[in-house]
Length: 143
Image (cartoon, rainbow, N blue to C red):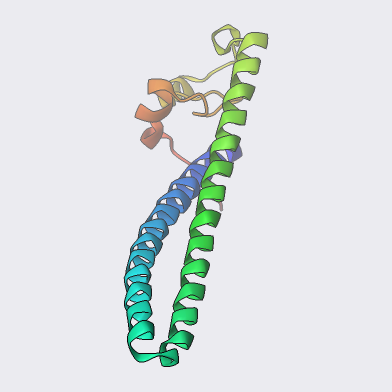
């Protein structure tokens, strides 16, 4: 069904984005550590050899600021993901209070029961059924 496909795609995208952001964070962090070392060295050279090292020092400070801002952007993005997740959890709780999933009795075919899905909520509800049998769902091929 469309919802199931959408959920799988969103889950896959979310995992890819989060792991990519984390990888970029680690790269930026390592770069900032190295830039800090270079800034320190440049400051020593500035004291030792004079104004010639002012321009590279300014460049390194600006580069560090840029990298730090990208790191802040990653943090903001992760916080936003987390806030959306919390909002989703709250929504699930309020929906559960109004009509617990166990009370809902959507008509199911034997194949759908085996796949852990119903027409109204295809493998969306998670749990063991939603994940363990997901690979057994046969998607129709568009003609």
